[in-house]
Image (cartoon, rainbow, N blue to C red; front, side):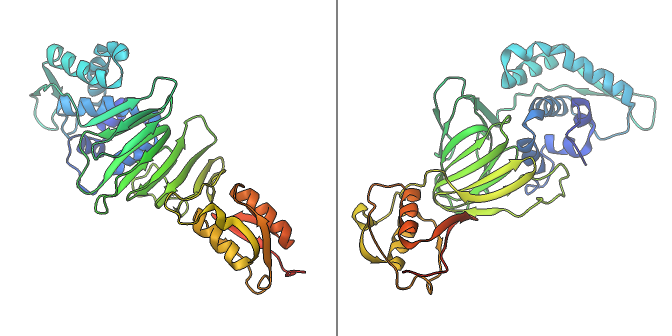
Length: 355
């Protein structure tokens, strides 16, 4: 089912949405959280509808759609002044207005002529926290598990007041740098409009600006898996398989056409825990196998080459201060070879051997 065009009224009248709003879905069913992360533009409608379901105690019985629509519209109009309070201020405002102004909500039963009157209960949902960086420099946010997020200007994250024992989940819009505490039995998920990123404990950056042509995930340390976000149908599967990223690798999701590409970050950095010292890049008649082994260990990026064609090759060059790409340019010049980046690794092309 496609929920992307649903209005507040449509959500409120949907039985599956009602059961989620009232916490009646199985613990393993996270469709609505995932769908909302993939459709941030529907956040306001979903929050309004969820509050109405909880406050009005709507029951899944047959009723006059026109009457239901009229009453829901009345509730929404009564809390229009929430604009000055912000999204979560609106929750409290809605609860106050609903409790003080609407003392009941009538649901027409399938049988009989008598109306059922359900008292309205004020709802202040403190389970979700939303924070937006409204200043012109990054701000650090500490999550409930001690993990940290450096939120870039105009970026927004949403997370629960307390993480689920089985998994840690947040949604992100904009750019954020994450330092996640390692908890093997409680994986960490970041949902954006296009991607779902799963980690155990690592540091990485996600850029997910709504107006950008692509979404990127860049890994600094550790390992993450990245998959395209689920589609509108809760039974849908990703359009293509995900990718595993290690340090200095990145995933790039192009929105038009929808395509997930695994590649290397623009400026690969030495791994924080590397034991390779800069002097190891001062090559003097160094066998090419040792050269590539040092680069792999220092940057964590796989290098593919033909051992047979380059088995007698050596490299002499002082490369202590060059970037990885500068190192590769000079090495390939010495070897009369070339290189390309494919699927997050470096492929050396040379079929002629060394002269």
